[in-house]
Structures are given as C-alpha cells and as structure tokens.
Image (tube, rainbow, N blue to C red; front, side):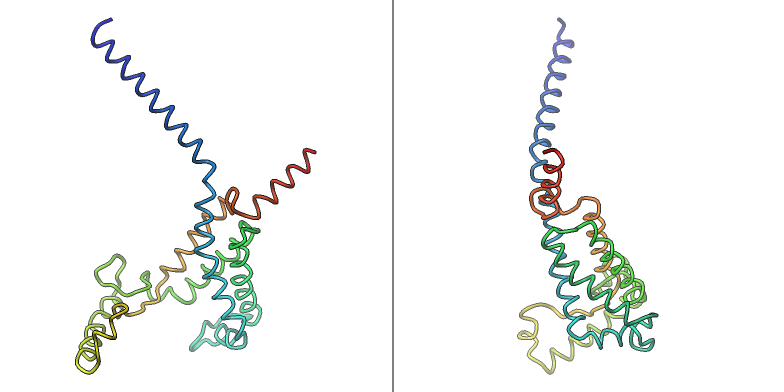
Length: 215
C-alpha cells in the first residue's frame, strides 16, 4: 500500500468514526428534544395568561377599546371579538404552561397575534423600543431620538437623574410589531413541535392512548 493509499484509508476511517459519533450524539439528544418546546411554553404562557386576565377583569373597557374607532381598534362585533381574544389568551396561556392541547391552542393565539400586529402595532413599524441605530428604524423612530435627548436634558437639569436611571435607562416606546410577530413565530414552532417529549400533558395523554390501543 502506498503512502497516498494509506493516508486515504486513514482519512476515511476517521470520517466514518466522526460520522458514527455524530449520529450517536443526535440519537442521545432526541431524549431531550422536549426542552425546546418547554422553554417556548414557559416563556409564552405567563405572557398570555397575564394579558388575558387583564382583559377579562375589565371586559367592559376591553370591549370599548375593541369598538371605538377614535382611540381604540374600531373592530366589528367588538363584544364577541373582545371575549374571544381575552379567553384565547388566558385559557391558551394556561394550556401552554400545562402542555395541554398545545397545537390546538397555538392556532387562536397566532390569530390573535396577527390581529394585534395589523390593528394595533402596524402603523408604528417594526421596533417595539425606538432605536435609530438598529435595523428597521423608520422616520418615527429617527425622530424619537430628538425627543428622547430633550427629555434627558430636562431630567438631568431638574431631576435626580442618577436616581431616576439607577434601574435602567429611559427609552421611547415605539409599539411596533416586533413583539407580536416574535410571539407568532414562537407559536408557529409549537404548532409543529407540539408540547414536547416527556414535559407536556399532551405527550403522556398520547402515550396512554397508544398503550390502550395496543393492549
């Protein structure tokens, strides 16, 4: 065997070992693939529960906000839509935390996020917090820098600025679609992954049903 042939065979052996090791690693990871959906659920669940609860505890104001075209959303059938949105968020958030009906509840929550993005946040562009130096900065965001700078000057001159900013810097809320679209993408992932292996009620219910069919 020539040196070239020996080197080629050695390289092929190393490649096979690396591939086998990689495949074994992936096989071992499958037992932990529920951690990704679990993280998404634990992140999103409290957000939706709180949002839905706030709407439900003052449902009359929520209905008015849905109905009013001047300072609200101006939506048709505001009473029905307000109840649907509030219950979708509250019940859907609880379901995400439990991992129960994750794929089912992801759909109305995704619809709620799209409606929120289009009816509430769309006019303000992408950014949730105005930052002219970041991507997708529109004219509104760029103009906010002047107002923020002036506000800081006033606070520095007439207020205890060090105390006021001790827990964080002042920003301007732009209220763009960033958060609602981010939540939509996370829910879309849950729609395809489900609640996750071992860590959701859906997994154990499905496992119990499979065991019942095979017994």
